[in-house]
Image (cartoon, rainbow, N blue to C red; front, side):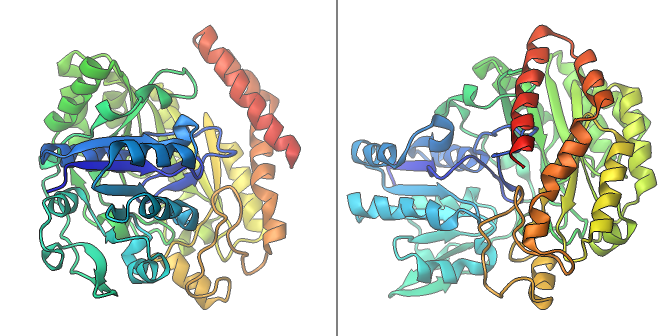
Length: 471
């Protein structure tokens, strides 16, 4: 049985390190740094099994590899558990090398969607890495800590007599209520905050799984096609713990699709209202899973913002990316949000194989027509396991097995009609065109409700302007 485990975000830059979202925060001014929920959940499960844990988010702390070395030498953990992203994989896994240099007996472990398909390759390429966890990891990590025989642990890949071995997949957890709460007492929660108010904000994972087939999204790969929800009572219990133990009242309700189950949303909102807790929260949604009654209930329960993956203003691209929605529905839904008094944040994706200058211009024009409160633009990233990856390889835009280091804020591959150099400036051009409209600037500043929010908008707007001028 392990005694101690050290769980880290390596000192390789600030990223959203979530299963389906691996976004670099550089130049992403509408997206705030989030707590490392994977590590918090892992630590919560380990602590329930009696393992002493430490969590270190080195990028958030502004610390370097020296801090990791010092922590390993002082803490003497049995295991080092790494949170990695695909674009930073090679740099992240240097942490395993550092651990083995200090103590060869430390078990080095990692997890993430990258390893759903490339686990054996990773074990061959990174000899300092001992074990890979695939899929949902809360039960896997406990069995590892209890030192079950490795061949009996579902959902791991490891070495047997020097050769990589892949065990059977672990089934998804049907009852999410049985997973221990994240171990927020192990981190400095004040490192994670809402960019508009500066208030401490944490993430609460409310559901897992998404039934929709968008070709670039990892949700179905890592969480399954079935939307699995926590009970409203279980979500509220975690909210209450955050309020009472950590003084946190601002939340991101994270899910693969928060509004997939209409009745569940209404039940959760009623549960929050009945609790008497005064909280603010945001969530994500598709534009075709929202209605007036749901928005009213969400607003009354404290929802202030909904993020929508609109993705494109081109009907042709929406069809090819298998988004299964339309432009008219997006316009209607954002209009309903404004009527309900809920802000909207809209995401667009550019750089899919069929992107042309004309489809890009359609997206820019549509974004202005939608006129959301916030806009973010990403370059699509070809993750292994997605249909987008397979198409990119088939079209000769990507070599099979290639792992691009650029993504989200820089193009990772060309399209069939635009090379990477042509694509490179489009994101900044898109954002400049949207955010520098006098009407948008005036409306945003006019609608601020406090001097602090007004100041924060000025600060973030200035940073965005600096990025625009760099282009």
